[in-house]
Image 1 (spheres, rainbow, N blue to C red):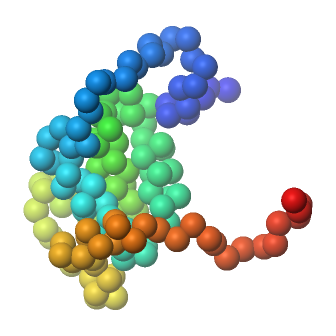
Image 2 (image 1 turned 90 degrees about the vertical axis):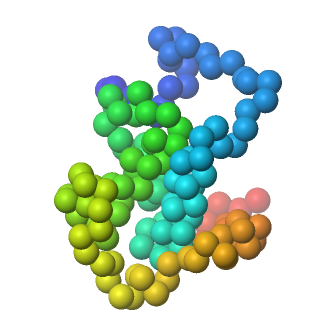
Length: 136
């Protein structure tokens, strides 16, 4: 069985990426925009943070291997937006708006002025679900 492209641990064919002495968060301005858009659209609640990560990790192997970090984020986000019907094929190809998101989702979009506060607050880590079957 072939490992998915994001699972590179222990693969001797993948070169080790050395740490950079100074690695800025955003090497290019569009990186900041991709992160901001991801956070703002994620606030609509149309998918979970796990689905967002899965979308990035599920990119085709050829794309995953050649994309930079934020290109992976953008590729995953585009796929999620398309799957949820928030964008269409024309919009992806042209980069122009052709339709509007459903009203109930447009009302949940995070405004730019609130992104900083949302990032500072962090995300909830507790999830509702079944009781664990093991104890400490």
